[in-house]
Image (cartoon, rainbow, N blue to C red; front, top):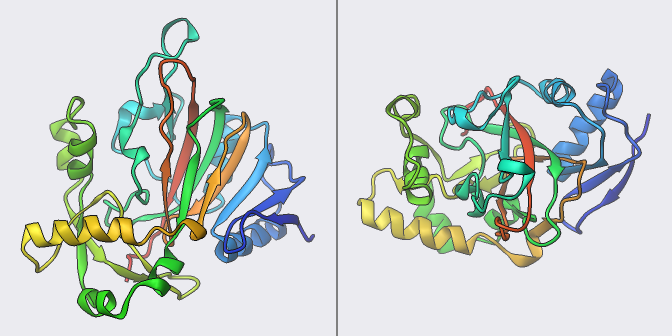
Length: 282
């Protein structure tokens, strides 16, 4: 079978057209999906009718699913799913952003020893304005980085910490001691090589706290500058969500963030699973 597709941007991203994922595809189709995933980094499957159980089952076809340490966001019957919603009493928007860290450029699970491979999202409820998800190409970011930066960052590693990013974005809702103790700081190469495509990319984002071997203040200054520098408008894709949208992306070579929206007026509910790559970044 050859899947029908449409490119989302000139550089990355593809829509797979007419594929029903209410049941898990056969091995040949899954193999083709995996090939497209590595080639295009973002896969958009259009609108799907997908139960939570089917969502988990499809995610497992990519690999082992993360059970996120922030268990207050777990889908009740399926802890593999991370559910973010601002719908409160009487099924009305409650004015609360459920995870403010998602509004800043980041890559999922960079704060773990074994980092995010794919993230796969289903949209239960979409906003009419705002709430779009932006993706930024980190292969392209590496290619465009100056020789000076490449020399300065050669063999450098960044320390990533969920507690660091969570405290900055959610000081009003700190991690519990158990959550913090379960997520010690880890370090990864700033220039990582994708384990499947063997291409180099920049690996930073909001969870990156400091640079190993540099004074803390210097590392923070570099990371803040780089997180701005590595995003190029012509190397981004903005996805405007519609109810039922199903989308997957590669955390090893992309950063992403969610646009702000009026959480008191606009309802937004998504559920996602993140597949963990069993190979440490190098």
